[in-house]
Length: 313
Image 1 (cartoon, helix red, strand yellow):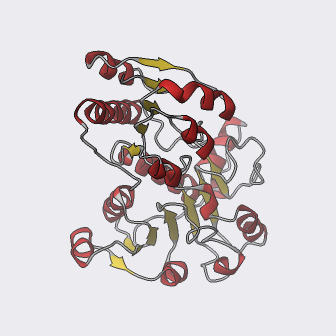
Image 2 (tube, one colour):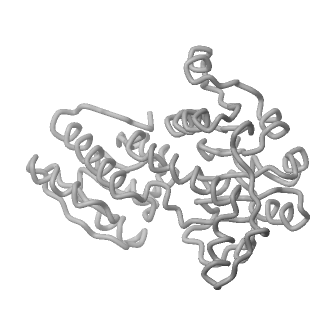
Image 3 (tube, one colour):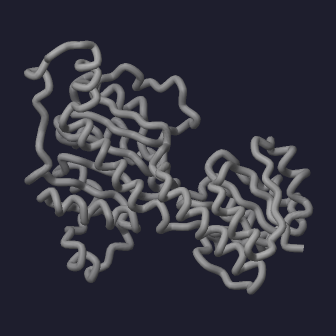
């Protein structure tokens, strides 16, 4: 039986696709690890987003599970090794939230460089403090992009529209792509030294953990800003806060955090920090796109055994 458990909040578009293909489904959200371990036994498919962590315990209990679908990109909340060991396909939708995340990245860049959040707060306080909000333009600045997947590529395209110089640190960036996207591939050390804006769009791994730390911060321009719309653990938050406190960094913008949900951030109240609550993919358009894509991919696998966008091997 191709029954699917939807264990997270998703767009209604998922239900429509399953209905059209006669795939039975049940939605149960907010389950604990133990509850999900008990519930998952009879299901062939599991749909999650970021609120659910699929552990080895859950996967080991899923005797009939064939596929885990994640609308969106990040699958660091799934034990991929356990899924592979148990012959379960894990798939995502790498293209659905590209535009939304790229647009949010530049929204945060704008907010920091033009002091928009501070100016907005001032105006709402019925003040006119024009001289306090002299910002910086992007034209002629150097942006360093770490990670050159679909989002990184979109960031580079938008950066060129602003007239910026684009540096990229990515092991997968080919010579052909360098020419196509008009970017320069450089070591991470060069990104740190020369960038006015450093933006992360890479995966979190042992290698990328704390790429920004007290040591790497010493080599960054004191006027530079760092943007993290990738994963929280890429940046050491305490070290960034200390750098800003000591005027060793121009600003920090983030949509992701080491611990989520984050309701007591160490950055709270800091003028040089712009924070959003992990809303990179939170547009109506993106939510519908990724929902339709993951549902269609799961249907194709459950009914036809066709695998699309598998992230584990």
